Image (cartoon, one colour):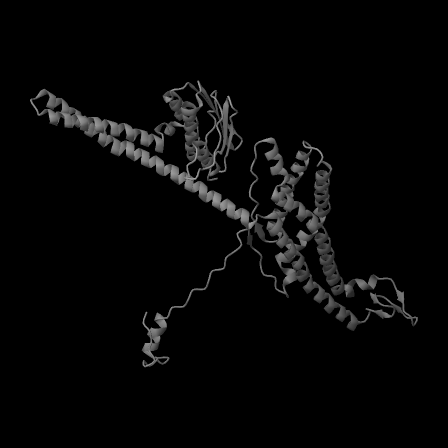
Length: 476
């Protein structure tokens, strides 16, 4: 980028130099407007003069009427939920009823979001789906403390007076406007009224002696009616906007929950990508490096046989023999390394991989796998290495005589249960001063990384039972 010194004359407008300078001038881009990811606004404009004749005005009018129709039932549901929760706090099982009512408030939220989409021109994203917790207390806690459910309950309470006020003012402005504009037509059928001076009048009265029964007053009332009719969409627009804000704030997801969901999706994609990358590395090692080492080992074996049948220096024969033995050891180590990266048996499914693992174990291992469970490949890998590590612990540390492995699907989770009859005493220990940690601690961290749970029950004398819950998919 060139700089202009004070001694250089500036190009005058209209000259070729000025045109070239204008072409090379860089205009900074306008910063993009970051939209709220919780909703999409599809509202049309609401002009003041054409307001009563727009689709938006009548859609918002229909929303306020429908909101008033639902408001008493919605308020009754919200108050019933709060009262049932307060009344059943002394119980335990009864709290599931209150929790069910809290979860049911999500249905009310879906109803109002649908109304807002069709009548208010705003599409609000649904809250993050509730996860099905396992266990009595976890399930109860997830129901009673469901954030979207409680926000929906608050919405039902707050919008009750808003629905009444919006309905009353909307109808007041609309009816007043239409009535004042058409007063000159229907006022002739009004009953006669006597003024204070004894005269009789037919028409709307304001006070004791002011009647709308002259052409000038009729025209003035028509103008007042036009003004009320023009103000009607604007007044109801304010109430509709309040409903929009409440729907977005209370019935949509929070920005934090959306961020967490995006991070979970990103984490799941990274886990799937990492698993796919490990599979490729294992295949490359098996089909490339290992195959070449096998070929080298075969060639060294042939060279060794030829050298032994001929009169060759014994040192050369020993050298080739050592190279042959080292190559075979490298092949064995490479196979173990590839198996540790990704067991080839997992390509045939978790059941086959665990059966293969059991067959290679020095302990009797009984495997019971639910054939209908179809977890994601990344979850299968984590499940396999959990079982492999637990079986290894039973062999090396527990002094067990047998291991039982159960794999089954529970809802949206994959449940692993590994039991051995060893001496017990297994525990998840914290890392020491040098950062070393136990194998169980590493497994627990790996399971928690995908929102799983890892529980160990290992009393002194045994048995040791490890229960692992994994999501069926980490990228959904």
